[in-house]
Length: 440
Ligand SMILES: Cc1ncc(COP(=O)(O)O)c(C=O)c1O
Image (cartoon, rainbow, N blue to C red; front, side, top):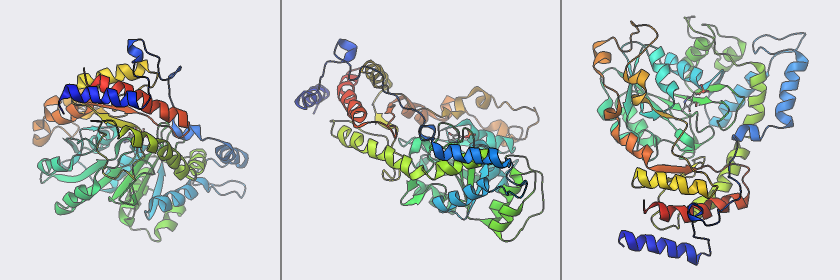
């Protein structure tokens, strides 16, 4: 089918389905009166359970996880850690003050430092890079593929004798293709950190994200699956890596809850920092964790009919999903051949009051001025003062495919509390806007 026939066929299909085809942008009736928009998933589910946890901490006056008072022992953060590890399928979990803290603990646990290199996707959140740079090691960026995650076929070319680890980031709910990534890591004896910050609770081939690499990290900042406003968690099944992460997060110390988890202590104190979680955050995270599968189930239930209906639109393709059943299933991303088509689609969807957006929540790291220009707080910082650090080139020329892919996708969020009408409106708006956008 040529392009003109194809566009005509899609318009005919929409008419046959009984849907209004005059675009709101061209005077037609918008699909909705008011813009569709959800809220962050975790806070939407705050209720008496979170309140009771916070009240208990206030009533007992025990806000610090390692010290009790008047015969009351702190239990919230430790209970959360045990339940989180069990949920993910890892031996140990460490609660932290943020996802960034979790990444810094992971890098420290793996003893990554000056002279070492870490491969990560060119598109992810700043923290993957900052954790590596703050350890004095060198970030090396690989291209993403149309899953928006690390392209396994671009990893090996980036490996040097100094490469120590790969950070496989699972972005916007969608698992990275871990089987080939793990195979490359094993072949080259590299460690793998799974950064699951944007995919807390998602899975890959039946296993929860974070349980397959050497270390998994999670963020519980407001926009993530479950939240205490700020917070993070690290998991590992390796006792030595876990002990090093625990000691790093608490100025070299290890206390009773983690000693009990580990059974024995293997390491001497070393220089660390303070990334502890409070009992307030621990209580809220405990209440949220117990709702995790319910929240994910609600999103998937709402997004299934959207995927099902959009799949029938001729020519429509989604982003790559290495394991659709493990994906958090929102946002639903649609592929275009050109940036102009994507931009037109965004305009048309906005007019229908069903807003769509380009891939968000991350940045193209190699084009960030502080990375491209290698700016650190101290001029002698070891990351970019070595011959290799001086020689490596970042910038747009280092990640053309990443830039291209991100310019051609549009996503529509599906929330856990969307109604059946909301999801039908998404489908109706895409049915109108997608064929029209192809003409851009
Ligand atoms: C992929 C990724 N990694 C790490 C982080 C850092 O998490 P936090 O904001 O909790 O420090 C984020 C936060 O947005 C993220 O999206």
